[in-house]
Image (cartoon, rainbow, N blue to C red; front, side, top):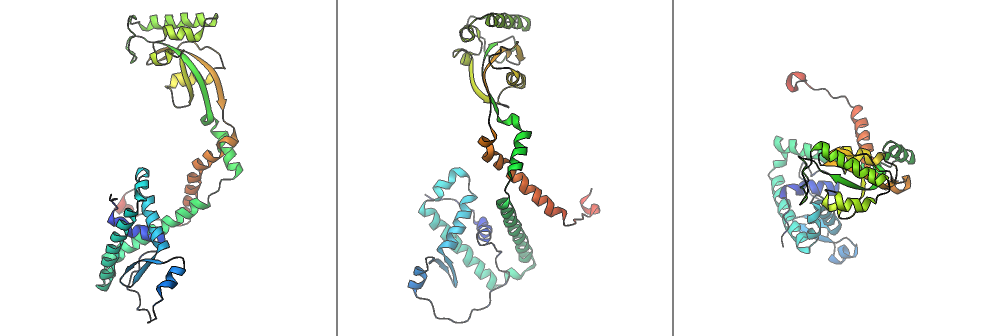
Length: 310
């Protein structure tokens, strides 16, 4: 099995892993020194696992690079990337990158205007990216932040359990049941009103739903729709369902499917303690962006309007 890793992403991944840009000039020749015995490297707990010319990459450095590569993959590919062959493939491609980069420096390609411009941009990308990671990591919403978001978005934590009876009319997307008459809008409304009156008078909602609902799926289960949150149903249906008192039977509600008789059997709202973690995930990025905006506001930026326009 071979895992496709984009060659062009290695340099960025290494910079992210080591927190620095690649050197812009050839490093000074190090003073001669006696080589360390192999046992010393192994005993350090971080042995050299890849040597390219004079450059050595330790196990921890390689693992950092590998983790960065995997983090950029789609979630469904990350498990396959843990295969030992994937690490070997990365090592081979990394070695190729390093060999070419070393030769490029010997030929002073890194000193050309084009290289300097690209290195500068990549350095900026890495430094800005690492700063944003640091900001995001340090963002810690306070209990007051969490409570304020909860209070302002309480409807997001609401759910209802409901059942309905649907009476379709001509033009509905719901298929006409076998043996049933295609009702006009007025006739469908009249039938829905009649069924509601029977339920209010003591009729069994579930039995009537089984016999009369044109929603065959829920009708077979007494009209049961289960539990749902806001945004799951068409607007007219949702608006009525979340306003109903428990066990109240609605007046007929018209949607593009027909007329619905709705009964809510449970209406719940999650407590603050139940959604703290979820709120933290929601507002963390927003708070990080506010920090970024604050940083941006401290540095004046001017655009040449004759070149960029307004």
